[in-house]
Image (tube, rainbow, N blue to C red):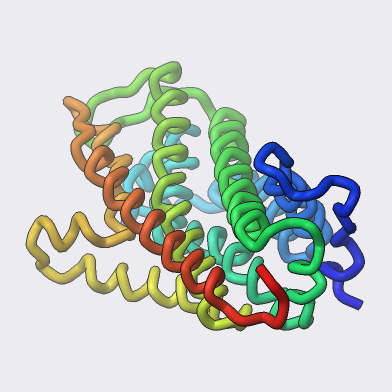
Amino acid sequence: MSLAVQEWPSFTEHPSSPGRPGVLVVWRLELTKLAGLLRVRAVALACLVVPFFVVGGLNLQSATPGDTPFGQWVHTSGFAIPMVILGFGAQWVLPVLAAVVAGDIFSCEDHFGTWKTVLTRSCTRGQVFVGKFLAAVTFVVAAMVALTVTGLLAGLAAGTQPVVGLGGQLVPAGHASQLVIVSWLSEVPPVLGFTALAILCSVLSRNSVVGIGIPVVLAGVLQVVTLVSLPVWGQMALLSTPFLAWHGFWADPAFYGPFRDGLLTCAVWFAVCGGLAWLVFRSRTIGVAA
């Protein structure tokens, strides 16, 4: 029996009403289900330990990853290490982080044939959709916060010397800590955009492999597209472009235009993908009244 069948309770004691916290019930249940999944636990563990493994690996070699921002400074300042991790993983690893849960959170019910069980409980179809959506968003945000904290702690463990910024300026330890945190958190909007995209793929395909795979493949395609000389509006429209907005934080003087533009791009992707996912899910025929 699937986990969805085992854990969906009946809410008949609380009939549906505008004030009933049905969304919160679904959200809590989905988080409980996610916490029991092996892949989710593996991702959570990776968020906690990978930055420290990177520090250990860099300490074992004298070479530096010079092809990424801050790579040449990893042996002279610990603050360079979380930025190297971010520079490498932002456009490759973070979309996977978004898709690993969001791409499966709806299609798993199709796989196990549990939609009728879920939708015959006293929660409405809209409450189920929003609750699942919020659970995926909660996981992604929690993972990003964990990576931010562990990345900074790993850097501090490696050394607190000032680091050279992207404008050639020397950034003192206190300001560098703030920039590391802000840079990592600036990745949350594009990751949420990929989360909404993965949810759309999950709802449309009803297949977990497709729901997880398409956002990951698209992230790779967008990496190639960014190498093409596109007009400014074309670059701004890509969901991959906001991943690079943190570069402006480390410039001298700092500039924030790409970050503000990226917020708009991510908001559009999030709203369009989320809205389309809801329209498809609402119109689906599952055999029960929604």
